[in-house]
Amino acid sequence: MGKPQFVPLSAYREYPLPEMLERARNFQEVMERRRSVRQFSDRPVPRKLIERCIATAVTAPSGANMQPWHFVAVADPTLKRRIRTTAEAEEQEFYAHRASPEWLEALAPLGTDAHKPFLEIAPWLIAVFVQKYGKLLDGHKVKHYYPTESVGLATGMLITALHYAGLATLTHTPSPMGFLNEILHRPANERPFLLLVAGYPAPEAQIPKIFRKPLDEVVDFI
Ligand code: IYR
Image (tube, rainbow, N blue to C red; front, top):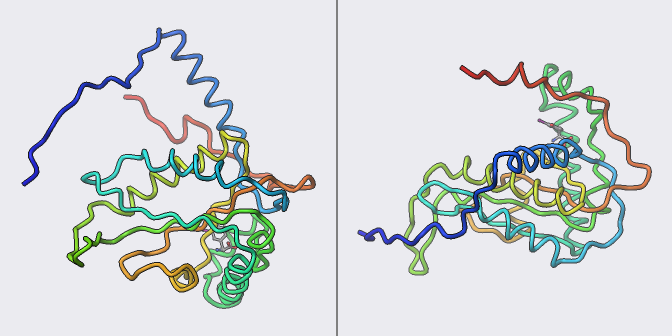
């Protein structure tokens, strides 16, 4: 069994309370400007920017610190085209047959359909995978704890990092997504979690007129 080892919490920084409130307010203002975007520009985004945002995502907490995630950042046009073609075929099935009437009704205000040109236009598609279990070099399996929750946390931080840097994103879940393992050559212990589309928004980008629930509806202080 690994013995715990401890080091001082030297990276923690305390701020005076007024400064904390100011920081929290400023960050709220930044995050309130985040919206999912479905019309992207083809303007290139350098790899180093995506890499930095992924480096932020992997600071997320994870069950037993197993870090059960894998990210594949795709800029290659041939791969993006394959992903688009395959995703659109699945989405056509989804919209025509698989989705329940109730689901289609819930999606109606978003104005989505099976047409996904952004999968080819946006400069980056970041496929996020959950490792259901880990694999040692000798092939032994390592149990992962709360892998889905952990990858959800990392993905939230990735979306935040990309937005904070100044990029637009779309959290995209073509269903089912198993084809991503095949196209991106990911092993059987990994399950696609979602596809994050990232880039500049198209100058003419429009977003659905939808609203966030008011805070008092989603929070109780007791
Ligand atoms: N995957 C489909 C449908 C879809 C599902 C949910 I849940 C959304 O929030 C949005 C869309 C699509 O991408 O069109």
